[in-house]
Amino acid sequence: MNSKKFLGLALSAVLTLGIVSGCGAKPAAKPQADAVTTASVVNDQAAFLKAVSKDGTWIIATLKDMTIDKEIVLEGEFKNKNEMARKIALYTQDDKHNVTARFSLKAPKLTVKSENARIQGGTFIGDVYVQAKGFSVVDGKVQGNIYFASDDIKSSFKLDKGEVTGSQEVKK
Image: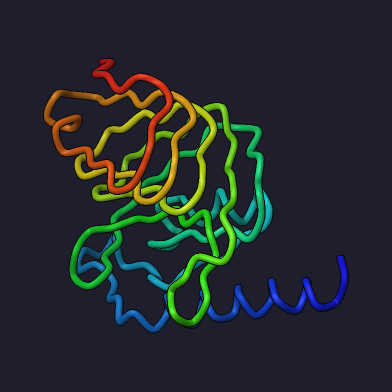
């Protein structure tokens, strides 16, 4: 990788982290949800799995295409702007919030246990099992199926400029 490209990626990562950490997010009120709510910028499996855990961060931002060889479980209660939220950000952006790169994340399975979670800006390759309300795909893609734990959870699902290539169904 040439030095200009590396410098550009590093600058994008710093800007993304600065923008996200300056959002004014506050930790949840419950003691078990009292976690750091800044972004976790990740580029390897161990860091990614730690960031999506109940002790992780509200936003998990990748810097490249990634393959995780085990199930991903997105869990925990986090707040962004006083609302429950989790985001897997599969993109980088500039200081004006323009997307500068999109990435893919491949895993055998993603289980979503966090309320108001979303996949944004890139492509998740694998099946998604949603067990919490408010899941969305924003300006991104799920290349696989989405299975919902109940009709109620399915009815709270949103596609916002997103795409799902497989089925979307309730599977108990």
